[in-house]
Length: 238
Image 1 (cartoon, rainbow, N blue to C red):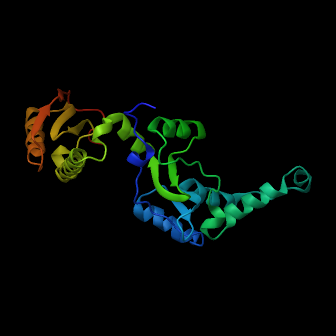
Image 2: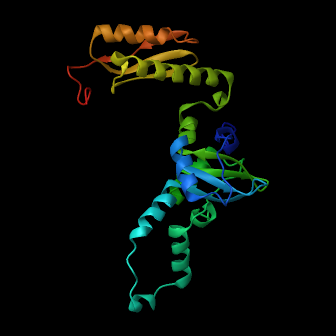
Image 3: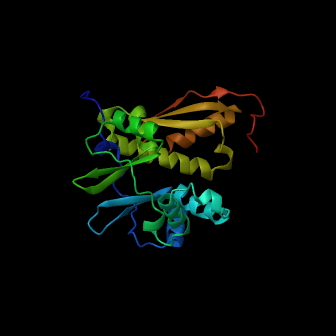
């Protein structure tokens, strides 16, 4: 392992929304929708991981309502255990009925490269991180992108936290200003320096975006790497 390798413990989200196994399915669906999350680990009172409920699990339950009756001839060739499991998952009323039980997990000391390979090979979007038998956090694809974009030394540092705050403030202000909401302009932040990328339609917009970025607390410098674009940009006003 390279000394610069990032570990799951460095990348994972620690504040994970978890649910007990007896959580009603309707409450699960409301939780995912209200929190804007795509899954929730199911744990026991001691924090042990029992399974995970994903959007796919809930959609499978919805789709199961249209399952056609099975004819007597086909029943002869079906595995009754698998059929019973499917019935429970598509008609269950609580988390333990609908959850995915065979969860792909990673250890806290797993490298970012190992996590990425697990996600790719097992075709999952997130990896619960389990240490000492308990759920410690979750590594998502977005977390792994941070490993690609950020040098290892900056993950979790004060400098990175400042850049994250600047980035969030920029997005909020650009959404609040109707003239700044372009599909083709975006900002990158590193070490307090904001770099504006993409295409801009006019010198006035270019100047406005530079001023907007410079006004965000913590910004040390603004670099303009935007390019002039023809009028109009495809999809700009859609």
